[in-house]
Amino acid sequence: AQKVTQAQTEISVVEKEDVTLDCVYETRDTTYYLFWYKQPPSGELVFLIRRNSFDEQNEISGRYSWNFQKSTSSFNFTITASQVVDSAVYFCALSEADDKIIFGKGTRLHILP
Amino acid sequence: GAVVSQHPSWVICKSGTSVKIECRSLDFQATTMFWYRQFPKQSLMLMATSNEGSKATYEQGVEKDKFLINHASLTLSTLTVTSAHPEDSSFYICSARLTGHLTEAFFGQGTRLTVV
Image 1 (spheres, rainbow over the protein chains, first blue to last red):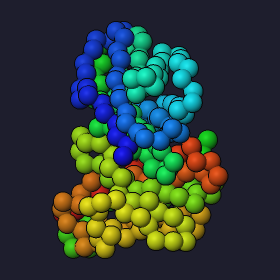
Image 2 (image 1 turned 180 degrees about the horizontal axis):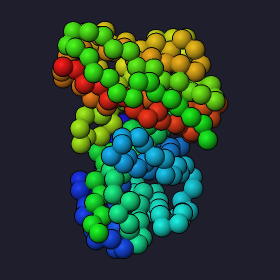
Image 3 (image 1 turned 45 degrees about the vertical axis):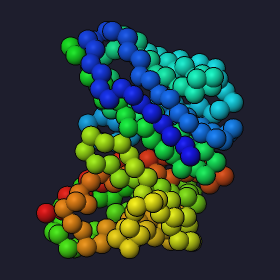
Image 4 (image 1 turned 90 degrees about the horizontal axis):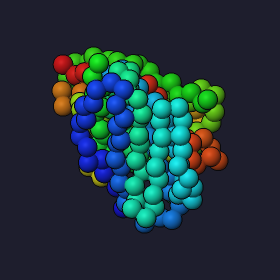
């Protein structure tokens, strides 16, 4: 069965610091997809990235970067030079062939001014 | 990008009444939609998978008679919370996936249900 673990429940950093959110997943499928979503206080989910299991290249998008390592079943997310607007709950998620997206418990990120 | 619209954004209802939440894919067809529930400060828990023209598939522990799901068309799925009770108060979010594009998923803005 698929499972996503976000061990960090809550993180607080001072603005401009870098922060990494950890995500470890479990799946028996060879084809799967990994996601990161941001959920601000409004509740709406903001899509950040989707990565399929055959693409292990790291990705950078502005201040955001993702490190996908199949060897450790991890898909970590780093925010560089954090800003107060980055404060939110971040969810890592996994989808297998049945298309269901299963979410981790989320990491609540506080960026302190 | 594709848009999923959920209505209403919030609703307050009396205990014992039923509430219907709509999820529409505005510019694409979705053979499959998913319904999630999120309690405060918790994760999104999948409730059911809604397939157009067939019965929904419920996750373990979700009462199918209480949470009625109808997916009558490729652009609309509805979730009805029947005989709502205060413990049903939660944030409900739907998701739709593009037909033939199994990797894409789009989420509605969510519905905050408060049962008093």
